[in-house]
Image (cartoon, rainbow, N blue to C red; front, side):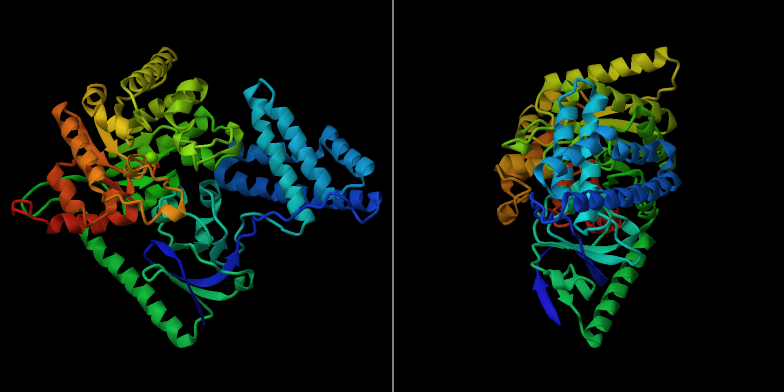
Length: 542
Ligand code: PEP
Ligand code: MG
């Protein structure tokens, strides 16, 4: 039995076969050792295989997400047959004696650059599509098969690293857990793993020979065991079953209030990334959704989700929550959350870059599409809107102005629109310093401790080398939280915490004593947090 250690991002045990996630691109050699005709035939065969894959993907998407969402695969099929595209590939093979991989890859890059330079937003978005189909053919040519599909049997996925968009696209029903060589425990991929309740380890130096072998991922002990003997396997299976029993015991706390022994009651809400997480929210009896990271809808799409697509998702969530609060955070894209079709530039300092509200206030057509969808969904439940990465009063006023513009337009169109509570994320030191002024503008604050820690301590939350320095318990961070709660209350705002620190049971008492009104955590943490709150007595002196 081989044992490797890593860093756990979710306590839990996963047992099953390892599957290596093959994203790493092979080196593409430019010059072919084959004849031009042989290279062209290779392309021809790969093109047919890609057509078959896309046809199958279209059928799957049609059944799972409907015709509108499936249409992208039809677009890809058409692009694949486009005469200009195939002529360009042919030309590179003919003139340069290139490999089919090289010819496809160069053509993909050239066409993507051409699309990206066009004025029309629709055509710009095609840049990502042409790259995608080209990569699909290169994968087939280099024997890498289907990307991202996990096969029939549930697996522990082993990857160099996973981006948030790759993670959201994985088939959760086939994912027992994952291990990655790189990554940081504060990244959005880690947050997703926690939301989806998937045991995961980062910093594990596995090798290719692990593919297909049985492993035990032990998130409690930060270890992964390869080919365990039957005795060890039985012990770990028992531990995993105990976990399940503990989770079942916590179910006894369902429908109980989040109230301390001395009678202080607060809201415990849940964080979600898509409509599929709402089942977990209800199963774990969260009082509402304190953070709907709407950008995951964008990351899971191949093109800008339309107003209609977004409306149907938000409406579904609002209706399913049946009147409980649903706080939709507007698009927080950028930094580690990248969707190719946005065409965002590579930046020197992406965490300090063009992201979130900065994109929304400068690309208003995208922002308006989302706000209109949220406003329309508000007619079907209790919906709040929350703006991320705020640093100034000006931004809040501008964002509210766009919201009001959308409301007036919808009313003029005769659409049903409900009341929408407006709040902001407090996740920059600037927002903390301006909390009194900002509180005059909104009805609630939700403290994003993940970014607040990053920006207060000047520590990149994505950098695994800094994990040991990233200390959300730092007195500076705790002082910022206290100041925000106090400033919010001075102006009649309720104040919650939706960053990962809200789930830290060692700080629950501190937050309650500070006067926090709401904690929003991953769905699986709702009941352990309720248990913790119900054990506290705030009347006792510390
Ligand atoms: C935060 O920054 O704490 C937060 C909740 O937002 P995200 O983790 O998505 O940046
Ligand atoms: Mg944040």
